[in-house]
Image 1 (cartoon, one colour):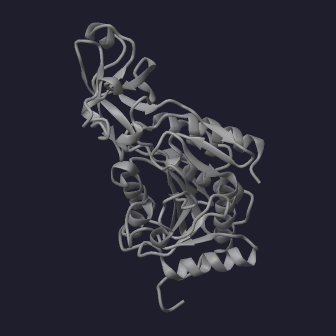
Image 2 (tube, helix red, strand yellow):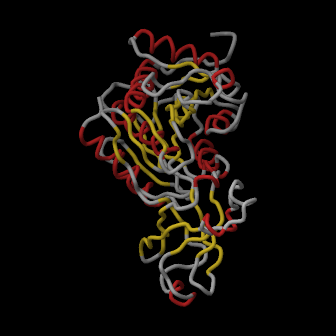
Length: 357
């Protein structure tokens, strides 16, 4: 299903750098791509990018995938020319040492590596204890504070070095897959819907600052005021050792996208999605999520204004919030198909009030 052009966009998009609050590079790519088939494309003051199909239709449908990624921000430059940093989003400190990074400065990228004290110099009691972020630093090869300050500044954002690559025929790894893969699904769904006759207006959103509080989806949804909202994010793949299926369910890479049932998901919309997916012989994996509510854009979309009928569609992901998150293109394609067939089936007069459908 994915064309060569789509796969090129995927690789370029994944390799873009977009720490939360500093998403301009990913936004520009997303905006340019949607401009090829959307009736209107705009970026708002927060940095959300919104593409529109069939504007003016009475019923408005919103798709949201966040293109911000976890990262860091420089807070101090030492006399030795080392850069100290704070986390930007949900950083797993176990994954941080020895990471190759890029500091995003006004003059361009500055490469660096995250260092810590060598294991040989650690006390026995320290060797089995994860280092704190405050005990790590970024080394850009500078020999002094003055030399470092010619290249970087306090406040500069930091992203993991671009590293997208395919592993096998269907799977890929990349930093920032959470959630540029969701934004990619939004873009490809819009591209496919542009070929269809639609009864609803569709707003495809690349949202910002999800990793620091679902902020972009909050403002973009308020502005769009949709009746229906789809959040596209990543979910936990459980086809790995020691991940408790009895708590998280059985979700495998390549088994299809995850369709969630939780408090963030409208039951009427959920039945509508599954009915259309079944009619089109599409496959999916059921999940109840690992908590009753929260954690994705679906939560904030649902609670906007007087309420929105929401659904969460997730791409199974291994190694979440690491430098090598892994997803499967078959799950990506499946999510696009389910979203396209669901939205194309809307007549524009549906009610999503539970209990009276």
